Image (cartoon, rainbow, N blue to C red):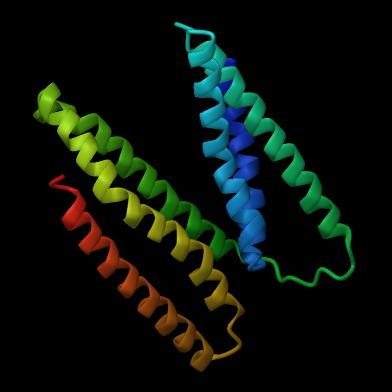
Length: 194
């Protein structure tokens, strides 16, 4: 089980790099497909475990590991072939931008882990179940919005040639995010009590 977890983590890291490559070139369709492949792999692993009525977590873990390795291998081979193509003139990201992204993503992961560790100390099992359902319902639209902005805003700002274009890209994303937040907020406000 530990070996499959280590392989999955390594393959997931490679998959994330491939996703970042496509996002940096504003090629959102392959980036979103690779991102969604994680959910598809999880669905397949769950279905297999359910079909064979497995009581061990080894089968889903191996299935996840195989799925992540397949997408990482396929994605990295495609990116490697594109990087050898002389028409690729994309500028590399400077190290400062890379470390900034890593620190931002790492902080989000640490906060999420702390939330999962601390919350059970203050809530009982029924309250935890209610919190999980509400967090899933309320958090999902905003999580999708967060991912969407990450896909479009950073490449849009980076590819802008001047201050005016950067402001225009930021204003456009701000308007889209504002409208989406308003719509998601109204939907959550209506759906959550149900």
